[in-house]
Amino acid sequence: MSQDTVVRFRKKDGVVDPLTQLLREGAQQLISQAVSAELELFLEHHGERRDGEGRRAVVVLTDGVDTKSRLTAADVTSIASGMTPDSAKTYVTNFLDSTITVIFTATGSVLGTINLLANYDPISGAVTGPFGALPIQTPVSPNGKYMVTANVLSDTITIVDVATDTVVAMLPCPAGCHGVQFGAKQGGGYYAYVSSKFSNVLTVVDPDPDNDGNASDAVIAGRVVLAGSPSTASDDVIVGNAGMGGQGVLAIPVVYNGWVQNLPVRWKAQLTPDQIDPIP
Image (cartoon, rainbow, N blue to C red; front, top):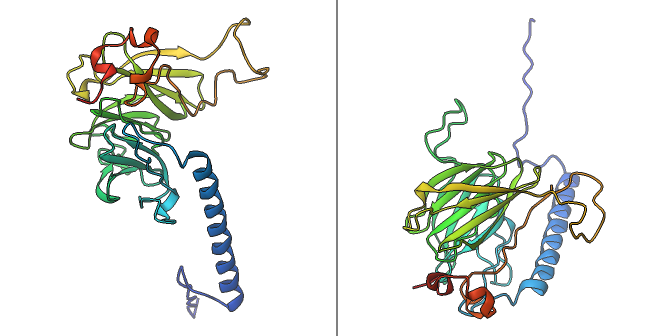
């Protein structure tokens, strides 16, 4: 070639013409209206939810949109949250950057960020410690000692020490790792039940096998195959992929503070004193 041709690319946020600007502003307005409508619907159904002390629970909206001073700012694509039983700290999973924002609940201020990819090198693939990618549900145990997070991309379960806000353990998870909830463990302590969207298996995690408060020795205690027999009760006919698609988990009885004390006698009789009164 005898002559070079230089083509100037416009900047990412540059505007080519008034029509482009008009379309952009219209799209932003539509998104804002949709988010506001979704928020109002969410608050209508869940706005009166309370923690164990009767205080209003934190509501976190995607991308930290602060609406009517009822929301707490988080980070990139906030998708789920967990709270310590004493309501002191709220944890928000940020889906796209694989972090967890730690929030001081009383003021909404950010205390720090847990980077779930700190022990993973995306270039070499080297793993130097527990890690998780694309975190979703992340409840804190009823005794407030550890937090279990389902990571859907890495198919790992990460355990965080709530006292230090550090990742101390990692366990494998079937495809589509998504939902987590705690239930009582016979004899003391708790199990974390983890559902998977693309597997008909419920993973049972023991975050603290020896009940010493140290979750670094977390193990998989077992697995439940979600495939019923012909006599299993169902509210509809399953036509395919039985037991798959699990996103949320509800462990019965509910053993969180404020709930566990009001259980029927027959349930409370099976729990230890520490499980009935999980917050010292």
